[in-house]
Length: 153
Image 1: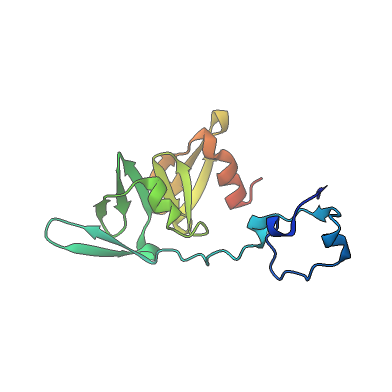
Image 2: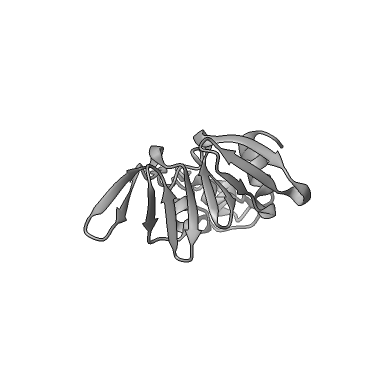
């Protein structure tokens, strides 16, 4: 950590200390990473996704979802059947628990519970085989994330 001269009001502290002689005299104060100290919101991930259909709204439990496939500003959700949901894949993945789902391509995300096999390909890509036999190709830019999540790195 580095030290800089700061005023007391420039520092965000959990429990402010009363000003002592070193603080009043303008002595250097240790810089504190404010973002690390701030209490953040608890992570609340979606448990189900409401998908609007023609004449009804289907409630799809997250634990039943096998994979997601992007289609422009829509996401095809593969569960007990395919559903077309109006949201981007990036937005939907941000609402899901990262310990349950893995983004493998700019157009695909998969449930980790249905992932059965990983086949390395040239240039840092993988073919991922799911429990239903579906085979998806990963993107090169997702290689590190895939390896870290699956404990390969």
